[in-house]
Image (cartoon, rainbow, N blue to C red; front, side, top):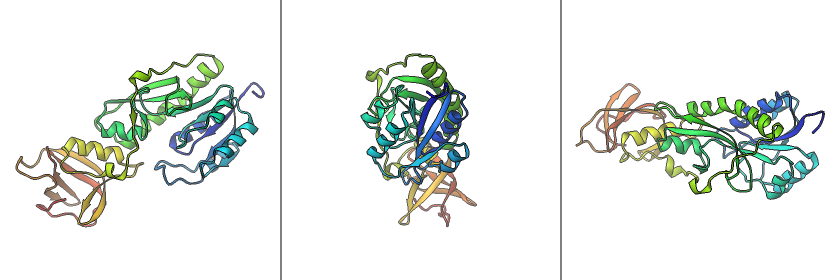
Length: 299
């Protein structure tokens, strides 16, 4: 602690990290002495180049573009921070790193821990049609999203939410929660709440196959998949004449009959068209088709 302020380091490289960067740098109780980030990322669809943003706030920056735990350990040992915030980082921190700051390393997961640990939490929540998720800060303990909880706010998922709108709901909560972590835990000494591991499940890593629209799905499942993968993520896709074509927005509609096969184009209206699903149909509103399939053709 210097001049009555807690020395903090922030690790991360996505939109959530950006909000935490702003919150920490503007907090009177925090001396944000370093941002550890990446200059580029091929695995984070929501990647943000945080170096210029941090430097504009007077925060020194170190970029680590490879999984080099020795470099990270050396930097933190040299800095000797009171606390480390790790938000939007795709590697687990080593036990050595976790032991360096006296208040530990604080992680973040946008899910209702202990439920829904693991990968792609916002995407899975939307794809599965959940009605609620959460925004959770916790003390990292070496596992993946397993540490005791410091701050958790539940977030309703509306029927018309998509990846962007749900992400924005999460981003709006983060400044409030960073303040709670600082005031209640770091300064106030409030003990974190252990997770009930018996209630936990872990979501697996999604693959490209998980993003393919299979027209034997019902219309609601297609709708959920498309809204889950829309911007800032990679987009759902369908296969048509040997090509993978992105679909960014659809709407469920009542069209077609029980005798229409899944994948059949039922109608076309300009750049929009309707496709039969196993149950119901979807109107494809935003997509990357160069030529619209004809009515009566099949995806």
